[in-house]
Image 1 (cartoon, helix red, strand yellow):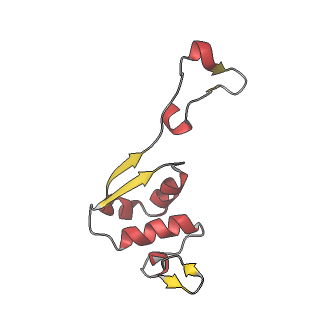
Image 2 (cartoon, one colour; image 1 turned 120 degrees about the vertical axis):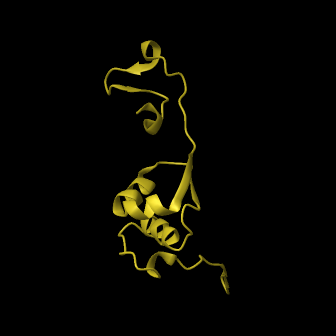
Length: 102
């Protein structure tokens, strides 16, 4: 929608459905969109941390199972040879995204 100040954010479906509100606005928006989606029609795209999707999944597992068809995640690892790049102080591999190292 457009206001006198320019483009404004679309109203969220997070408060329109029957789902309980969630304190994390991003999680509430995901749950609101899922609630109004057709069964097994949603493809989730993650370009950053998976924690928001994780919170939404934990908040309403049955909604996720009934609405989400697939998930696309961007991520990867660079130079993961432990003998060369292992950080012994933190027991992690430098240059490796946590979600892909696990």
